[in-house]
View 1 (tube, chains in turn orange, cyan):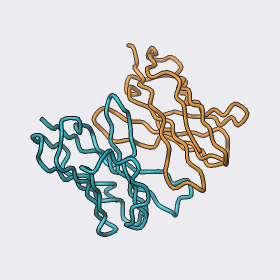
View 2 (cartoon, helix red, strand yellow):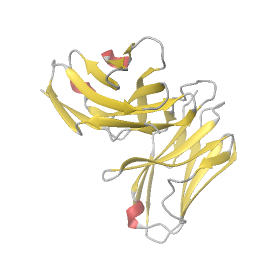
View 3 (spheres, chains in turn cyan, brown):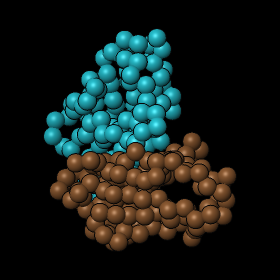
View 4 (cartoon, helix red, strand yellow):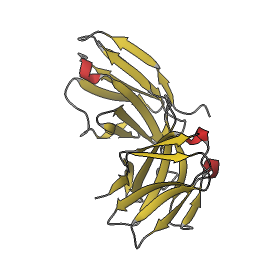
Length: 113
Length: 115
């Protein structure tokens, strides 16, 4: 069975500050890991994915995530937050043997001016 | 590609009425998923299809909900009769066996309000 846990349902940072959104996963097989972003009144959009290649994955809009097997983590970071980053972020997991994705509960990111 | 297309974008209906939500997946995708999103319950997988065949409908809340995929380019999610607690945003997503990670592409959603 697979699962993901997102730590913190709401994160607030100042514009220009580091963004860190936490995600831990559980998987009995090598996982594929994703971060999706949902802007207000829109569908989910793939931000980045890990599929067993490089452990540091770069995505759109300056975001990146690092796969750490020893910590079963896949945290999302951005060095400098922008007002346009305000959105809901979802971590998700699947595998080569799973045709569906398991989503976390989401973290709402707010940016303070 | 136009991406996943959903219609209508907004639906307001009265309790007891039938509601039909529509989805056109990305051409060539083998999998189609229906999700429901609410503030209380977050994002829930309702049902998914592979090559037009329902694979897992364990997330369908009750018999009032039904989903069909008559061909590779069209799916419907029907609620009959609708109830106020069905108010939510319903998303359709698709993915392809050609991408081993099965990353999903989401439509813009249908916001359903049942009064």
